Amino acid sequence: MQAVLYVAHGSRVKAGIDEALSFIEKVKPRIDAPIQQVSFLELVQPSILQGVKKCVQQGATKIAVAPILLLTANHLNHDIPNEIAEAKKQFPHVQFTIGEAFGIDERLVKTLHHRLIEMDEDIRGANVLLIGRGSSDPAVKRDLGEIATLLKKKAGLHEVATCFLYGKGVSFEQALQRILAENRKTFIIPYLLFSGLLKRHIETKITEVQHVNQAIILCNCLGYDKQVQHVFVDRIHQLMGKGRCIYEYA
Image (cartoon, rainbow, N blue to C red):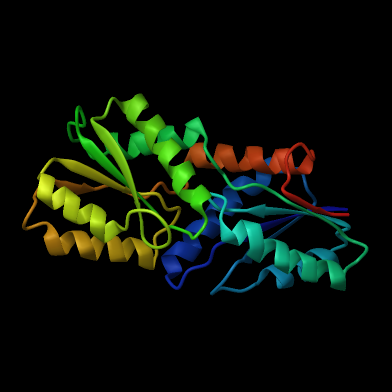
C-alpha cells in the first residue's frame, strides 16, 4: 500500500508549524495515496522515524518521502537519507523513495515577483536582495543565484543580489552594509517558506538600520501560495511515478 510521508523543517515558532501543516492539508487532496502522514526534520514531533512507523502501522509497503525544502542541501543530501536508512533497517519489507527539493522553477520566481508587486511600490529599476537560509553546500549559493537571475529578467529589475543567514556566500550582515552604503531603494525578500526565528532576525536587523536608510522595504517571505503548492504537488507526482527521485531503498 502506498504512503506519502511529508517532511517539513520544523520551527520553535508555533506560527511556522501551523503554516506548514496548513500547506500540507491543502496538498493532500491532490495526492492519490491512501496513507498520508506528516513528519518534521527537527524541533517538532513526529520525527521522520515516528512518521514512518505511523505509515507502516496503517499498512504501508511503499513510502514516498516528500521533503518540503526549497533547495538541495545537507538536509536532503544527508539528514533525510540517514533517517530513511535507519527506517529501512527497522522495516526491511518497506520500499522507500525520497523526492527532490522544490529547486529552480519559474513558478517560484512568479511568486517572488508577486511579493514585490504586493508592496504597492514602484519596482522599476529597483534593487532586490534575496535572503536564503544558507548551507555549507555550494549548490545552494549557485541555485539561489540562478533564481535571482530569473527574477531580474522577469521583473525588469536593476539588480537582484543574494545573501545568506549562514553558510557559504555573502552574509546578510555584509549585504545590509552594502545597501546602507549605496543608499538605493532596495526590496528585501526572505527566500523562506515559513515565519520563524530567521524571519524575526531579519526584521530586527532591518529595524536597527532603517533610520539610516529609509529606502529598505522588507517583503513577505516566499511562503506557501498556490504556485508553491503546484510545484510541491508536481514533485510528489514525479516521485510516485518514479520519474524523479534522489534515493530509492527497495
